[in-house]
Length: 484
Image (cartoon, rainbow, N blue to C red; front, side):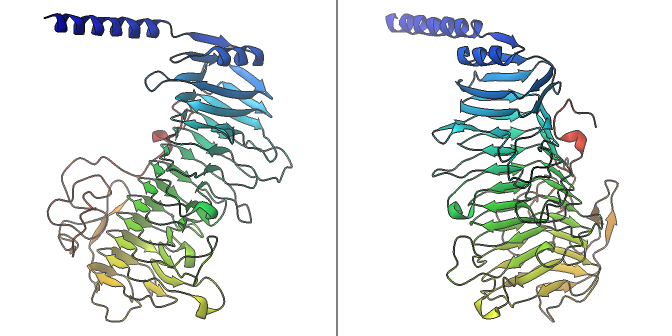
């Protein structure tokens, strides 16, 4: 009985302490740099700092503090989108469990310096921090050609979500994940990456995860549920340069480039929509390295060729340096729908002028893909791969380019345009229950519907369950305050 009473007293004391600490959480409104600095210096777990509406010119924000898992320290706009960071303003997030909401960066820029970084310096990084409901638009210093990243994410377990980015004309990747000695496990989700004009040289990626020198390190960053719209900075829309990253459920609209697995191994590209709409140089997925999976994706109306094909597998270089090209090994390209693309699949894409130095893709599996082409060949082979397994692929619209390969069967696919504008199999399509082989990691289709016991060919399973995923529109991503 005494033990029970003691336990009750401990519980009551804990609850009182918890309620007391919650009651002490403060909300502080600031309208000057000095007030902001003082509020950050005094902030504790659960506190909120509210920045007044209006222009904050040349404001340097250093949110250096420590919140707690259920009680982050929050810095937010008084009215989302109306607290405007302009001139030479910048934001540094340094510490743990910090959250920044509703800020707008525009009418300014920092030549050669990142406007937003998840660190104070190399010794003070961020962990479990979040940038949400913010926007960076046209934030480049006039006349500056210096390289800068708009968002640099350091540390681990950070998140960038429901933000809008558009109009970057300066050199440098828009958003970079800097990979360290331990897995990052960052999440980049539900953002709207708006138009970026061609840069005319390397360094115009929208997202880069890692760098070549650390590309064999594990990042485990997840990039999901984002809309990429006319992101034309360079040939790599996303450049993956680390291991075990996941790119899923994103929508790419009229983007002149490809999601590129440039360095690193064991990445997953799943359930994305690549909608070229016939625009020049629009592409899909380019694969380099080992043990990647490209599954359940929808490619339609892409006009790119070579490295901007719907799916391309590169050649590698013998004894490649980290900055070179590693041989493609054991890639799985399965259950994709490739519809009305100029170059559906390219294999053995050459890396240089000397073919003797090229190592073709090896031991790859290309299975259960649906391909409706607009021109022959449906498969372009620059260098013949070795050990490729073809099975269950159903095609129409042109010569396969592979002769009598039994794993590519020409049929009347019987596709129909659905109300959502996507080409889907009719109920009597030969893709139904036609998949071959076991793929236990493919349990759903691109719509989020379960595959069931017999799988259909392509990304769309004929099913009656609820559709939980679909191509994204601007109204479904980015800041809730931004007008559509």
